[in-house]
Length: 59
Image 1 (cartoon, rainbow, N blue to C red):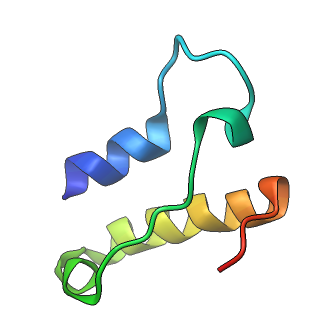
Image 2 (tube, rainbow, N blue to C red):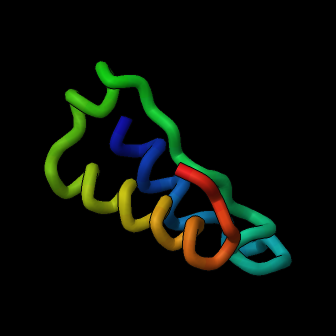
């Protein structure tokens, strides 16, 4: 689970385009969220909030 969150946050260094072109919202089940550490939840929320601000993602 942690690897998926980190991979989604880091992105691909060879991708062309901005954050909105290469990223998408991270949506997890309640069970998956319950298994995350506080640091992982913080990183996931930061990613999704950045997308809301820059890309217009809706919660």
